[in-house]
Amino acid sequence: MPIHQAIPSRRSRRISVPELHDGSDEDLELLYPDSDSETQSTSSIPPVHAAPSASRTAHSRRRSEDHIPRPPNPFICFRSEYCEKNKLRGAAEIRDHREVSRLAGVAWRALSLPEKKKYEDIAREKKSIHAQMYPGYSYTPGPRPGMKGQGKRRRVDDDGDYEEHVAKFKRRRSRVYSQQYKPEPVSSLLDNAPSSSFPSSPVEESFLEPVPRSSAPSPDPRLSHNTPELAPNSSASSSVSPLPEPAPYTPLSFVPEIASDDMDDFIPTADIPPLDLYSPSSYSDDLEIKIDRSQHQAYSQTDPVGSQFFKTGVPNQTRDMFIWYNSDGTFAHPQLAAASSSASSSKQVEPQCDAWTTNYEEASWANPFELSMSDIFHMDRMSES
DNA sequence: AAGAATGAAAC
DNA sequence: GTTTCATTCTT
Image (tube, rainbow, N blue to C red; front, top):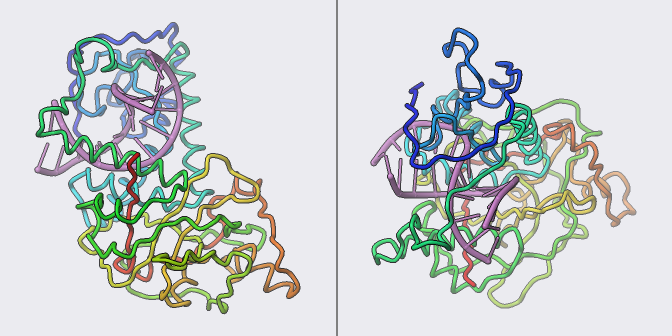
């Protein structure tokens, strides 16, 4: 591991660090897993200035010696792990970390809520450790562009960068959009196709209109017993389905409202994320599956999971691959589970959310990616306005 | 030094 | 609402 030098800061950031924590290296290790607290010393390194990340990583920006990095957010935690796992596995190595970030983003968005929560917990934990270590810490971002003669604003108006700036803005918007479920006209999608990350594919047919959220599938931990691998290995990807035989797919109460026009029917369901680095070049658009999990701010009791939409024409079997199964082959999908157990019910089964707080991987997920990632087409939504 | 992702926290 | 910065490491 390369150790980056701490570079003299361009401006000193004030961090109030009134007291030093009693600094256990364990804490450090937890917060910054990669830092080797051992090498660092013969003890007594004042952990105060010890924000390991500050010197080691930190985006190679100039930071003062005693800069204290922010605690990582859930996504950053996820991304780190994502990187690590793939490194370990020796999966197709992607050097360009911009690409890694894109893929991590895809994976993140496809993550189930319980899985996401896992990283939120991790982030919370790190945050709390951070707070222990730096009691008086408060985040102090650099100067904002608003004031001052745009001193530090990223130059965007030199027509060279403007487009990129816009693109970036839209990208950012897009995730907001996906979180908020606002419908977007197809045309704008076309105009703003995500470009490089994903195959430019026949977007003509658009997906999009978010289907009214019905209660989404959720795992029922009570029915499962073991902990399947979260991350499918890419190697296994070719073998299709050691999965439990899917029951006939019967969209119970979540039959999508079909918007007539160019709107195809979408069937909301669930999936697991690819915890792997897939080369975008391996994507193909012959099978059009829309992966679009919405994110919810709260872990709603009734609608805990985001939705995913499949285009019409996707074979039932394929769709079924995306449905959650328990490891014993029973349905994790609350509705399907209810249907199979009691014929009478079209009523919804409320997922047990408290189980989610502790059991992240209990339910076995049908792994759509075992179909091979190449069958999956992801499309970011773009939004203006 | 920039950039790619998302989210927290600060303006 | 908008900006920075947290992680990672190549380009």
